[in-house]
Image (cartoon, rainbow, N blue to C red; front, side, top):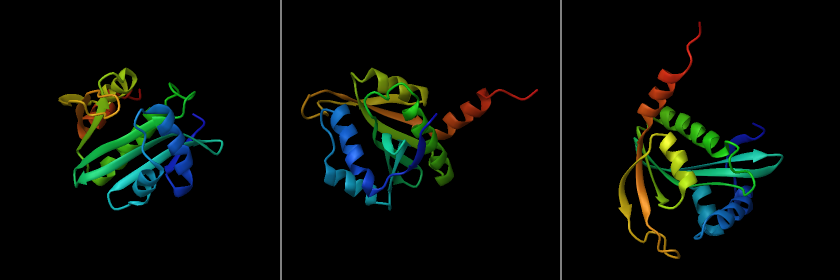
Length: 163
């Protein structure tokens, strides 16, 4: 791993916007991203930075005391498959545990197989479908939920034990 994860700052918006535009048919706007990054009451945005360039990011919204919603996650084109999204989610899970968050939810396009594989590794499971969720593509979104505490316990239970 050659990147570091840190909290997103206003100066990162240009990079986040570039990733959004490259990765999603309905990218967030600059003003939306700025609002999200600066709303520290119930939002938390992190970036993975490598050589001064943002190569991935993750946006969380803390809905209730024990629940979070993954607003957005993306990796800069050409950096996919390196474990950046996994590292961002691992860090988010650690933060969620510190905050006492027990559950997480998100929506994902039904055709986004790479994202679905990532989310299933984190214990997300489909609980519903939002028909025509994406305005431009009219694609459905799966609603996924995960139990953060169970995911962390599974990780501990599956960790190699010292001899």
